[in-house]
Length: 260
Ligand SMILES: COc1cc2c3c(ccc2cc1OS(N)(=O)=O)[C@@H]1CC[C@H](OS(N)(=O)=O)[C@@]1(C)C=C3
Ligand SMILES: [Zn+2]
Image (cartoon, rainbow, N blue to C red):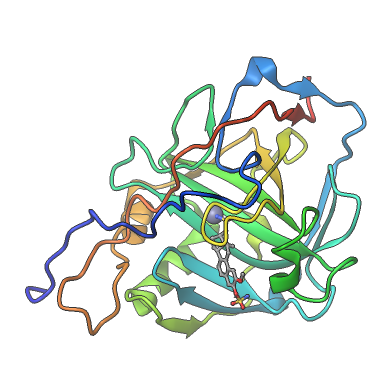
């Protein structure tokens, strides 16, 4: 509406000068020819109960679909993971244009958006906030989005977004199974040790980045861009776009692939 001045040059948050550890930060560029096929990587086993879906929250950085993680009803195991992890939320990163928006890249190829499904190690820790501080605490599945045909499963989420337009808004959201956002082939992925890409930026993440992307329509992604970084009270409203972190040095880390 007219009273909102839209601008997107919004420093989501200041990149800290010194980072805890600092040599296992994310996101990174995945150089395919330097990844190592690891035949011991197992198939990934996501097992999500849509009844654990609770709400959507605009946290002023992205919108998060949050799940009840007080039981083992929605879990992820297998792949590179030693333990069983619990689903806690998923969110996206996207650009102001379809030319960029993803956090990871593949041989420098940018995608218009990237989905992150966040899980924490419930075998070793009691809470997400604890696991966030531990090296084997988190597992995040990354899925690239491309512009193409409309994603039917995503539409239920897109229709709910206007209700969380402003920062700190939240709306109930039920029975959404994030498995519908996974590509048909989840056995081809790259995996490496990295960090959260927003504060606290802790190096707690086993990243599992899918080789196969999913397609969403231009109109669906346009609704992501209608969200705001700012709360309703703020005078100047800022469009929620370009909420991705700059890429970080690999520092010699191995990137393993589950496929040859
Ligand atoms: C440390 O306590 C909280 C961290 C939260 C985070 C996030 C969201 C909510 C957090 C809530 C935290 O405290 S809590 N659990 O007490 O509410 C970020 C979303 C983007 C980022 O994920 S990414 N891109 O690295 O895969 C997240 C999960 C990083 C931290
Ligand atoms: Zn993320």
